[in-house]
Image (cartoon, rainbow over all chains, first blue to last red; front, side, top):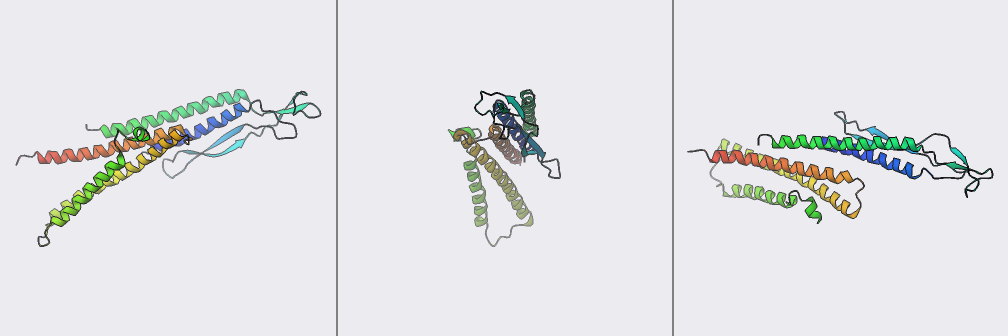
Length: 131
Length: 124
């Protein structure tokens, strides 16, 4: 009955997932692995519109993708995971990029809350009509 | 505590809906029992009865929807209390939907009652 509220809710869910992914990336910014292992790769949330032939049904998480960038090797011979050449693999996370992206995720979440509140106000104004 | 959180305006929707359902069904049943078999109601009376039950069903349908929305909100509140709620906004959305639907239904009922009272006040 109140479509706009549910649609904004789907937007909030996607942005919350995005914030979760960014938080995980930032939490693992110093995760070091040995050169024989895969490095930690930043996670990206893929959003997908829900098509219903009409105005649309909101948005959903299509999946989580990992960054395809090359690994970042660092020389740290004292590290317990260092190989024979003294190299370790740093996490493939760009902290600057993550910090700017989390602002986008946060603003998107807030925008959806704002849209939901506007819809609620409109519905309530309609109910109050003629009083 | 949970019921206190979810009850819209302190009213338990499911109880309210059950009460209303009883009133509507008992009203219809009593009307049918009282009507003598021999007397054939005129077409106009039958149409009026049909219309009134239509409105009753409309309110009942609406209350049923409100009830299910309220139940969703209650489930979310329980999940929030037990820590099973993954999305914080889910509860607020469910509660908002339940509240708006309740307001809509009560407004609908109040408007109909207003119209009825207007007719009752008609000087004869």
